[in-house]
View 1 (cartoon, rainbow, N blue to C red):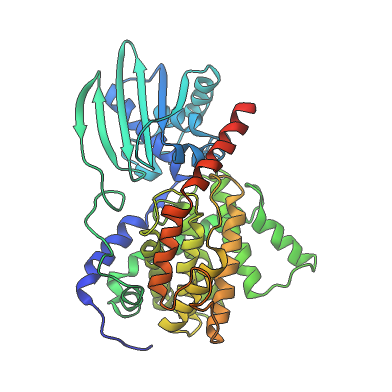
View 2: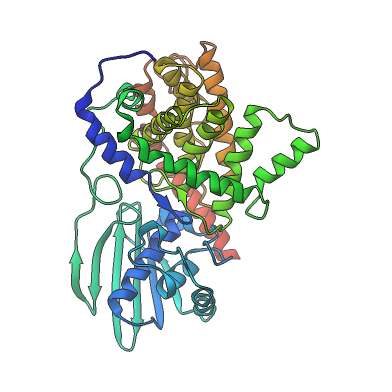
Length: 436
């Protein structure tokens, strides 16, 4: 392993970033955010709600319309609000629906069927915003979450403010880290040179997301892409090589998550699919090369923290599918495990920017597993090119000669160039919803 002169002063911030942005989450985090708001609102109300009024930002509406809510077998934000209110754990954060009872699910479905859950788009500047207002016996409570999936900014009871807080600039619980003085090289140095005890917590990502992958391989969730690919191996239509195993096991985890499995994912930057994309390719390659626990841990930290570093340059939610950026982190982690150094990791990320930049996010749904598999394939292809000394050059498209400059261009594409794309995607989805 090539040693450099690491900026050790940045390392505490890197630990904070990883601990805040790589956390367990049960279900797609957009409807889960609304479920959490509803659960907290009911606690403040002090009794079961008779009706719920939910408002969410346009981007959160886009990502919550088509995804199965864990434990319910039902799709969408209304059921998320209902079961969060009736059976959610207000202290559970992104695992608010963990342990959801059958009685709460049945009551939530009745509440939705009886049209006692209203849903609308909120006229707010926040890209990520969820609000639940619950009513019972002439009383009401209101909870608002903004800018991060579990960041409660307002609690009201009967119109009086009980709690008010500012929004964080990063992370789920506070804005006390940033990457202003950091580079991709600094991320690499931290992951490869920091004491192992500072990194070991990231190993839980492998534990949680491998369990999701095994569940997805049962073929009972979503588009069952992982199970389908496995059947094609058995039928002789696919070879049982490393690339296929990466696609199969990564897709299966996303199948399970998007299909409503009641297992948590280790998320990244507020997304379970991003966490899966940053984890499973690295786990599969680690198994292939018989990596030690330390080697896997360092590769996972490199993958997840690089994904956070890249995503920090994007809006929290946007038209750009962020499993692509999470898979760029996985490319770095795989390159490390396969014997490449920082140069190979940077080359792989740049090649991915030249390959899959611009893949759109058209809302959370079962088809996200397809985007996860596409991005995982692109990551492994980019790593193989890098190990052979090839990558998309700085003379091509938005790719620059330095990986940090390429990442900055990707951020500009997402924040500025794709803003109208996001509007069009939402308009198409809302038109379909109204016609249904």
